[in-house]
Image 1 (cartoon, rainbow, N blue to C red):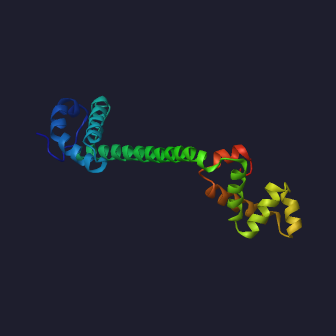
Image 2 (cartoon, rainbow, N blue to C red):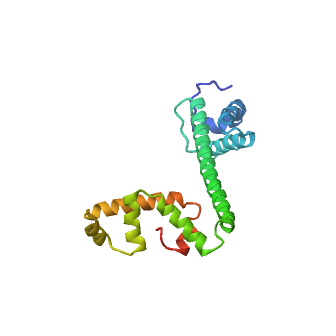
Image 3 (spheres, helix red, strand yellow):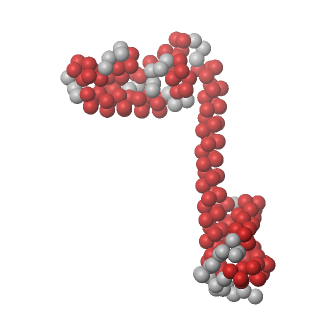
Length: 188
């Protein structure tokens, strides 16, 4: 029987693999399940750890306690698993938002006037100076230098105000941004 504090060496892994598996599988599975909350995922994680242990048995030289080593491997696999789930969930949410947005397009824009009104409403929500600079730049087609001279402000201020305006418009129009970019070219 292997003790909890066993320091395992290359030849020990190969000779004692079955004992290691039997002694640790249940505890590692329980540990993994606490974090991944799925029997199947926990089992897959622990199986992966044991596969790695077996595949690297000839080059592996574990010089800490076997328990600490195995639990560390399972912990890291759980972290990887949860990170992948978070990314997948964020992607799923983004896709749902895009699907909803596409479905809403039919209801939101039945004419060019609807699109124009929607954009104008978003522009009118901008702070006064941002709105003024945005309109001069994007609608009147003036260059930043011209705007700066006309308003008696620096070009840097114009750039900052345009940055603020575009950021706010992206947020306000986020559900319809791809369509609006295509149709108008106003928000870049």
